[in-house]
Length: 163
Image (tube, helix red, strand yellow):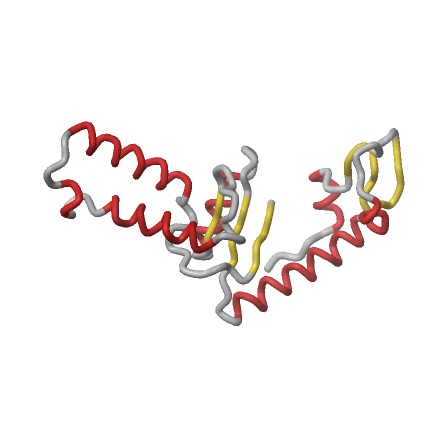
């Protein structure tokens, strides 16, 4: 594991927070100062908390836990998907589906429907018109896009990392 360095965070601009009008008082202990109407974040506190998060994730993986990575912003999508695939964990890089965690039984039904539709040689495609087959293919593509990184998830993850 690479060490998180103060200079690296500084170089990436991790110390820039939100403008002072868009802040939550809960984060006051992490704000070092205000400069030109922008909060400057305490990077020493950031490093300490990042190390705590890393330790938690390592413990979770060591205990055979599963992690869900979420990165729906354009800048983060590719990296989140690559890294989640690299460590064989789950990910969401498209639109977050409401109820993914709180209504997982419905998501599981949707995933089962996708798996059934992906079996093209199955009996569901027999005796169907071209239009019905096309509609099922559209549904399969839509479900495949929605559940791309979570279609093998059988239970709720032990941790969620939001980028």
